[in-house]
Amino acid sequence: MSGRPIASIAVVGGGVAGWSAAAAFAARLKGVSVTVVADPAAPPALVDLIATAGPSITDFHHDLGLDERALLRRVDGVFRLGAAFAGWGPAPYLHTHGEHGEVVAAAPFHHHWLRLDPQAGAFGDFSPASVLAAAGRFVHPSDDPASPLARFNYGLTLDPAAYAETLRRFAMVNGVAERAGPARPAIGGDGRVAHLDLPGGRLTADLYVDTTGVVADTVAPAWIDWSRWLPVAWLAVGEEPAAALPPSVETVTATATGWRLTASLRGRGIVAEASTEPLPGGHRLRSGRRAAAWTGNVAAVGEAAVALEPLDGVALHLVQAHADRIVALLPDTDFAAVELADFNRQTAAEAERLRDLLALRYATSRRGEPLWRDLAATAPSDGLAHDLTLFRERGHLPLHDGESFAPDSWLAVLIGQGVRPRRVDPVAAGLPLAEAHRILARLRAAVTAAAATAPTHRDYLARFLEGR
Image (cartoon, rainbow, N blue to C red):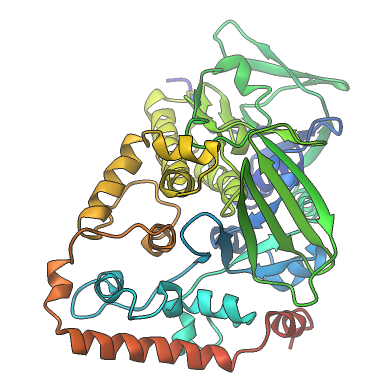
């Protein structure tokens, strides 16, 4: 074998995706030179239009050594607890991060709630994140680990341009170089990329990480289409006045041809229209994944590898998850097939689970417009069909590889969409009904009382940014 350690990486694409990858490599692959090829004329990626993120972003920043307070100051950011969905299910509901209730009598909490529904109250009433979001309040889960409010996770909503520039500065301070694009890949006789042709001359690297698809399309163009389950093809993003009390959740309202998302930063509001039909000033979207995210010496990252509708913070999560996976599985310059196959397996499994979570809302909606009727009548993926069948039988959630969302996130969506099991879980059924009512009432009251004393999201954020 002639392989040697990878000594140089070229990241094709700037913006949030390219600089996220470059920052991860600079912070964690010491001794590896990194160059970003940014084309200012390139169309924006999804993460350059909407930068909402789930809890994985806090781990990403921790690994980089970025201070959250300083970061939020620079990027006009706010804390994010999840999203409020309206018009998707029988009633509006919150999809937030963290636990709902706690294990009771050896059975997961949701089994007891399903047994008592609707007498127990809303499922979200037992979620610290949902109760805080509904009240417009926030506390950091580490402020009081003994509090009933401590069992949740949070993400961030960020200004994309400011976030990309923050990551760029971090990366360049840590030795990353920048070259101007566009990049044209030159393919060698072995089928691998030999170099990139740039306006300023050639760039050669051991590994080419592509966030745009320009390079990956030359070596592995095969694409698996998911538009039959995720039909949105156009996205238009604009601004609106900032909310006086910035919410910690975005609102996603279903429409006849897609959905409308509104979110807030500290200085302004964001509104995004998504549709199956063309939108004025809209960006073209696709849903699916590359059949092989890593081929030879080219690894696709973010939308170049997996394209999903930008809900639940999945677009930014995928960019950073892919970068982390490259770091964790970095091969040598032989690019052994078994190593690339493992990267591709993990990337595909993660993408398919995220696809199924997003598609779940379409598959279980009862809206009457033609788009929604067609989607409800479309057979779901094998994985989602299996999960729905098990849950509808007795509320069971199977475990899968590649999960990016905890079971409670799936439960929030399933229950919010009105999906219910045919029968009661036998373990939960062993607890007397009166005792179940008493325990759930106590859990609900504890979360409600604790949230009532929490500061507003605006006040907490102001104090946090001031260092108080």
